[in-house]
Image: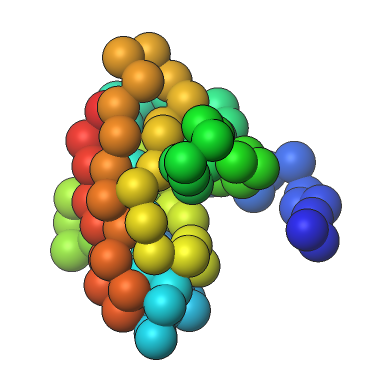
Length: 106
């Protein structure tokens, strides 16, 4: 997995830009909404399979602004369709459908 290193202010500033999602045939996306307490934290998810959890991927919780509203979210723009374990308190699971965006508030 490639990893882009951003300027330190990237993690703490308010993000007003759009997020590009790469969804389609067998790929969906996930948006995790959190409280401000999770701002700048990374949250991992992993695709569940018959043998338990698979490789984990992570995304940082960023402050976002849309239509005058502020919220905190981690975005996973390209995930294979399936059932995912979210690695945070409560260990919720979420289903990501192909060609769709799943949303979960944690």
